Image (cartoon, rainbow, N blue to C red; front, side, top):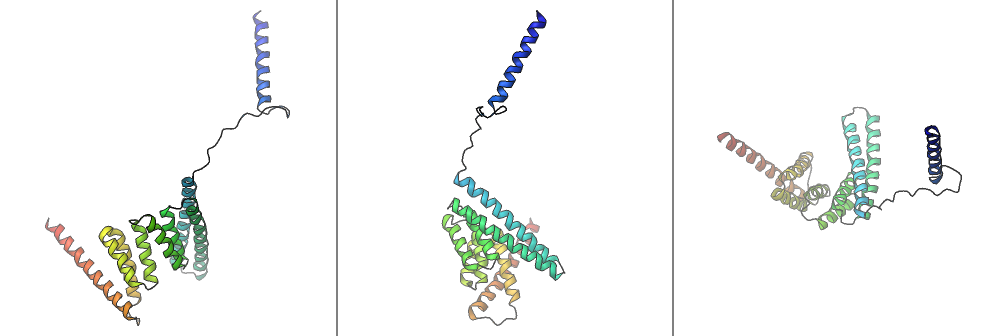
Length: 226
């Protein structure tokens, strides 16, 4: 009796397993497939975030290639790395543009788009991207700093000064970044024949640099006193 029961149980289990396999498509063409789990469509914010992250990765790769070019003493290596950097910037522009298309108020994507456009030499469109970011979030100071560097390159010195003063009053670290770019410009143009506006701006940069050095020295003395 026990042996017969075990044989019957085994036969039933085999039949159930066979039916299960048939149900999920294991047998023939007439089975009913098991329902696949449903996936929720991505939100515009999620789509935008994905493109944004990809764009930033391309930007970082481009910066690494530029660094490699700067550190190499071989002309061919420099040319190859700079060409790779420009390709990566192009990919970044594409992905960051898609991030903005998916979510129009993605101010971080607009800011990064401005950066990569500036790195490709497209300063006017870079400014438009920074302006878009600041229209969405007026106190997004990374865009103020990037915009200041673009204005400096375009010779819009009075506007670059305004950008610096905004940072000086709100974000000291980014103010130092922009001032470093201004100092490089002043040093590069030390012996150049400048327009009146450019010369006045260079004099202003030197004064701001001197003031910053005096402030740092005063702060250091005060800390030693305490």
